[in-house]
Image (cartoon, rainbow, N blue to C red):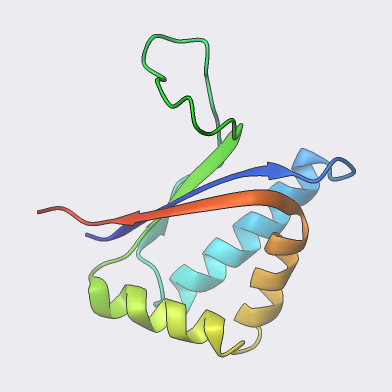
Length: 109
């Protein structure tokens, strides 16, 4: 199952609840249109724990989007790149609220 880890910071003027609404609408649309299998809730990083050893990044928010398979992930990528509406608008809204995003994509062996 391919997964996409989204790590980011909110822009200074953005309230968490505003972003959460935009994020949830985006992920719900991906799932409803069969472009993703699942999305995790937004998560807040706990950097002071012994578990967190990532010294390169200081992102405080993250979430994961899961895809059924690579074909579904590729279809989602194509829809976002082609700005297929309303997905394009939902994605642009999410991106407009964050800065310094980092994305990591992986799949099980």
